[in-house]
Image (cartoon, rainbow, N blue to C red; front, side, top):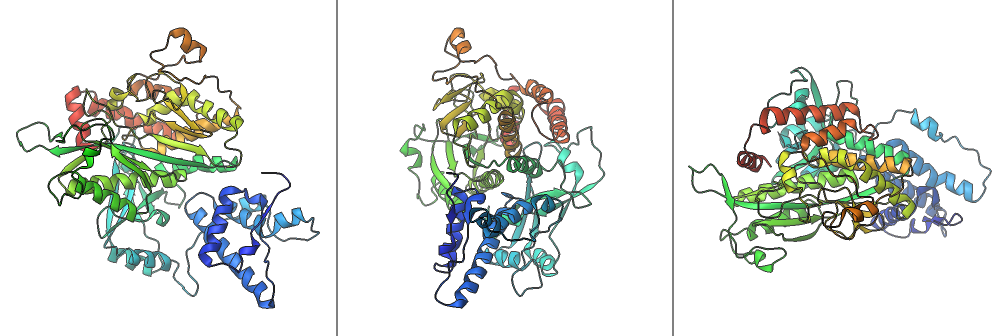
Length: 571
């Protein structure tokens, strides 16, 4: 932005529709920092127009900024600061107005408690808007969901009549969950470090409410709080939100977009077989082949096409943008490419998309698995994470190069979250378009773990479907911010070849000298030893404790084939 250029959006009030006014404000906030936006009434002709314009400006700001706060893109105090800037302080600065103001300073705002309500005009019930939303979705059941430390999708199903009864009384909907729930293994075994006492309150985040994954059901993600109402430090969404708050304090904003690679399998007809699933039968399944979609619209003839149609329709109904759907290389393997969203929304959308996918596949008799390497001789499945820095200046090389230098520097530790299961390391192979074993980056290089797409848009390829996306996103963003804080140079050169196939001298010249941890235990060790990765140490310790218990009590005793079956049944 030029220092002498400001944007005045007053012309839209009151001369275009309410929908148009909200759209203009949203677009301006995408393009400009709020310190450069003015809002005059621009009313003329009739005295009443000044009043109408002022009322509309306030109402539209309330809606748009309120949504940003409810979706945790801003905190409440930042939202107040934004409104003050647009309606008062920016104009005072530009026009050098000698006005006195009683508006609180940002320092005063930081010490002022605020609460958010969703109370419509004329209503004494703060929950009325939520009730209307649930009614519009024709909800019969509410699923309040969370994603735990084993990356297992969990939920509580609440009949909608009970939800309406609670909301109609003016009370919030909460679900009591044992604190042990964030320390359970996949078999419900408690890790040794925690006991059976204590409960969390799980609060639905109504901004995440979506229809699905089946007709009559609606789903939202929940936030865990302590008995005193404070955010639980171990809550997965709180872990990411803490990192996003740190980013906002630095003036940083991001978009994330995930790819969902999955393998469709048929249930085995042989009850005596140790394998519950067998590969999907098909005609020469391969990457992007059209014949993989040939049974689409086949009237329920047993092919996956009917389920795929249902999956895409379910995602569309949930408002989850799908940019592409295509066949991948392994038998029965497909990929969904989801649209970019702010980080918390992107993780929520990814997890809801997986539920829609798994549910629709199951209704048609299939198993959709996120196993990173279900077939030893075929390509594995990942959950690549695209990201870009959307705050002003984010596409400047001095900004994004320092950010991704931080990501590369911490990538061995981040791998503990991104490759969270021994099965993940079976996929981590060189020369397989899987990100390989070397810490490196390259422009449009499919063999590099960090691929530069353009500007600040880069892709983290070393993430698979067994990772908790909240944890991965928090770790990657924290790593990048550490690089920015230190103004870290991008010491790695742009690798355009396969890091595993170039010579040792070529790797050295590009600064490619570090290999990834070879297994989960090594990755956990790297995480514990990485003091520069700014994540809540209580969270890190709980994650390490869960993963070590998972290895000791469940996974280490399994043979490779038994581990394969174990993962297929659960992910």
